[in-house]
Length: 348
Image (cartoon, rainbow, N blue to C red; front, side):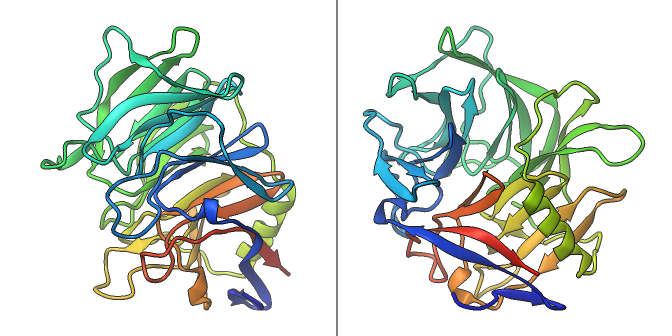
């Protein structure tokens, strides 16, 4: 991967490899940072596989080492999502278990090193089944779930938005269906960003997962309702700002993109790769898209990539220690999982 993957007016970017391990070779997994470690749960180990992995792999980004988690009884899942809770639990929500779409919550207690099956509390109204959905952490007790919903033989024309409330002490969860619906999305991403304009607050935006290029609002919170701030990455934010200054913004985002990655870096949503719904061939992408909310209306910036070896689908990105990491995913052939961990390298 020598040289620039993408160059714009003397600026360049690429994904620079920093580690390689066969344990990391998987796609449609979850990758969650908790206590300075990346927890990779499940996924598919090869293209065409229908039976997801039940393995949990822990990657130490500081040391560059990956190990299998000692905890037994992990969920067999792919196309799921996960979120850290209370600085202790890793909560896996929904996904494909090899025979059906699930809406259950399974949690890894990192203090005790054991997996726990949490139970639905009274009054819980769970989705019929979740797959290729998103699960966004709003607070330590509340997640917002959006996306594909239904069994293997049914697919709704719309998607419901759910609030998922967690009680770690009781090991219970409770779904509540919100009053809003979205278009039917699968393989989209979600980004919790500060609202632009004169009325500050936060909004949860959904990108991709359908033919539309328009982001969709799946939740809005007024100023002060969300008190936790995302991880600070001042150097990466500065580099992204300089990269954007070299490009031409547009109000039109990527159209028909799914199974891409997304990470929030300050006022930016950074999207990479995925599969386009608008091509018959060469569907797997390696482009970088950045959604900039610093002005109203927000602008999209597109940075193409020349390195076909960076094509990814079903991968994840994770922000840690002022760096954005790329983990796993299938490559250009859509079948071979990448064992590499890379960081986003922006050179000026």
